[in-house]
Image 1 (spheres, rainbow, N blue to C red):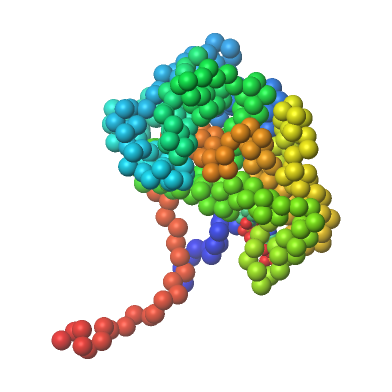
Image 2 (spheres, rainbow, N blue to C red):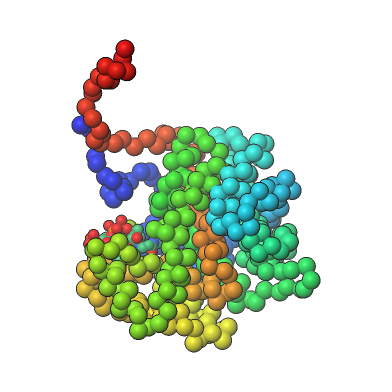
Amino acid sequence: SGLFTYDPGFLSTASNNSSITFIDGDEGILLYRGYPIEQLALHCDFIDVCYLLLQGELPMPEQKSEFDHAIKNHSMLHEQLVRFYSGFRRDAHPMAVMVGVVGALSAFYHDALNISDPVHREQSAFRLIAKLPTITAMAYKYNIGQPFVYPQNHLSYAENFLHMMFSVPTEKYEANPVIVRALDRILILHADHEQNASTSTVRLAGSSGANPFACVSAGISCLWGPAHGGANEACLRMLEEIGDVSRIDEFIQRAKNKEDNYRLMGFGHRVYKNMDPRAKLMRETCHEVLNELGLHNDRLFKLALQLEKIALEDDYFISRKLYPNVDFYSGIVQRALGIPTSMFTAIFAMARTVGWVAQWSEMVSDPDYKIGRPRQLYTGPVMRDIPISFSQ
Ligand code: CMC
């Protein structure tokens, strides 16, 4: 009983107002602050997009350099936090490390945790955006047993991340500009996506007044699942498992079989009932990157194109409006960039951090925000007395 609506999975419940991101799922449109994702991907870099998401407008050149400088100021990790890594097993999944390390940031920045103060909010946002690449790259270096590489503030956001991932003390590392540009595009395409599960998690955690580091750590936890950000890793593993064009049909039949809860990873979306515009851009990037790196015969890319073609001609996928989503091609691009599969979702988290903090900040600066508190339909026993044996 009660006067509320039953809406499991929030299929038809808007939880908040937001002026950050707009999606028209039927038309396949995605706008950040009104700007189409296609234009942003073509003409902007990730720092422009961060500024846009946080401040509402694209930056003028001097605003951009001031903002970039303010972010870079925070790119180092506290040495005490660097030591935190050694508590993890060497084979810890990078996402497990990130949940822990990002949450632990809360213990380091008591100087700016007054969430009602816009200066404190900005300080926390900058710290998170700046430290995520360092934290993410260190999770990888820890996995492979190489020394941590500290950030280089003269490099761009994407370039610095590649430097921390791939440079070793014995050799000079210079990132290939094709790889830098492709990574920057991945970051732009993942930066925000309105009220998806992890962003809603960040908002719900933040609605109690919890600090932003704890909230983003909650967001990372939610993103990890294969139905959400974990799909890029799962999709690449699926393509590897299919292995050959001749086996596509077998996997399509499995995905269609209602007795089997197997799903084609990288297909379907709660909001897009048309092609995910990010998937289109990612497919284009995939073509460009593979051509420029001389990998145009990439086996998995050919397999993915064929799988997409067959699925899009199949009644099961047509009738349910199941199209490839952003995760379908992003794994192939990242693999071509030399990024190991276990890092895919971690890079998604790094990119989405700006969206999470922009949404968190929008929420806590709204004078009308309330603690998030869904209701339920109770299905347990009616009221009853405890058995006599307990009441004696
Ligand atoms: N393969 C096979 N069937 C599917 C798939 C799929 N990937 N996705 C949905 N369906 C079917 C589902 O079985 C259901 O069929 P029926 O109506 O016969 O019961 C119908 O399509 C509707 O699915 P749903 O589960 O009600 O849809 P949802 O909006 O709750 O789920 C989703 C959306 C993204 C979780 C789901 O499509 C999925 O699990 N996809 C695979 C994982 C994936 O690629 N996730 C990444 C999403 S985009 C990036 C991100 O969010 O991080």
